[in-house]
Amino acid sequence: MPATPEFIRSSPKLAFFALLAVAASGFGQTFFIAIFGAAIREDFQLSNSWYGASYSAATLLSAFVLLGAGTLVDRWPLRRVALLGALLLSAGCITLALANSAWMLLPGFFLLRFAGQGFMTHMGMTTAGRYFTSNRGKVIALAALGFPIAEALLPTTGSLMIQGSGWRSVWLASAALLVMLVFPALVWLAGNAGEKSEAGAVAAAETNGDYTRAQVLRDRGFYCLLPAALMTPFVVTAVLFHQGAIADARGWSLQTMAGAFGAYAAGHLLALFFAGPLVDRIGAQRSLPLALAPMIGALLLLAFCEQAWVPYVYLALIGIAQAGTGTAGSALWPERYGSSHLGAIRSISQASMVFSTAASPLLVGFLLDHGWDAMTLALLLAGIVFAACLLTSVAGRTNMQQRQQATA
Image (cartoon, rainbow, N blue to C red; front, side, top):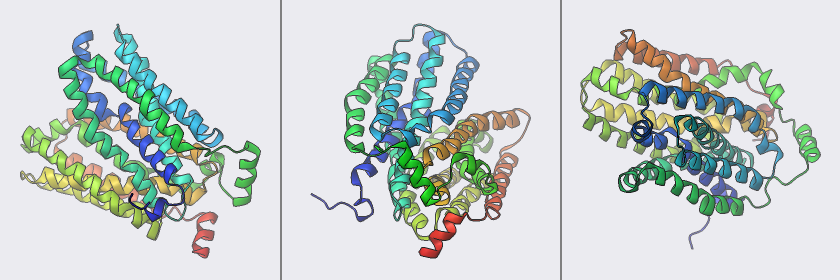
């Protein structure tokens, strides 16, 4: 048996709980749901606009609900939180599988987006941030490996199953997998984590000086850092959602873009092995603007170059930025505010992320429809990312960060 890596040796089961929860979120992520679009629209005779509007509405509603439900990670034992997430995600799969009219897509999409993209991701990243301190960056990067794992397995497998047995069978199989394998594994990995009295948790938070969500919302630095944490999902969603329009404007073929997504996945995966150690070495707050530098480079490359090799490089750079900002952004909140109320605090950033991924395709689509070319659009996005980087420089440091630096 291989030795347990040193950085997760204190709680290996919780580290793999975080990884599995993040990977399971793939059932509610756009990269998986998107493969069903054509079949669902054909079955229910839906227009692209109606289908897209229902999906966006469900996504926005899930963000609102997550603001309240995200605090459950602070108040419930981890195994009970896992039960809730797995059952709601399974219910979303079953709702879509049994849908006999278009209106049933709305609750199905809501359950998938809330429980998948929202709650399971939130649960996994909160676990990684709360139960590990000295190696928090490495553990968060390990948990984030769940995203490329799901991206590699779910769309390909689902597409093959749709061709063989229809789209409804895929959702039924997904629900069965969640109930029979994912949920039992999460419960076993969770163990007794989080089983403490609320009074004891409050007392510990007061002793440690951990911030509550209300205190975070009064911290000016939070609003200086949040835009940088949201930049990658904002830009990635916009660029990938409108990849066809960008490729047409630059004269890139669909085959070129398909190959370039391999570079995006490779950049994302490989950078995760370096993102965690960087966060542990210099801190999440200092790492965050550095992690956005490849994003700015990618957008400038998109703006000024049209050669056939550009999609491979700019998407690889975006993948690298996604790994770096995802790790730094998740480690930032426990580093800055402590972990006692981490679920409540992360629910703000997670809900904001969902809002940003709903808004950016609409914004970029509006600009494209009004005559903006790829160069102008890329420069605008690069400018927004650069401004977010500059804003982090005036965030300052909390008393908790100063104490940690003094004792380091």
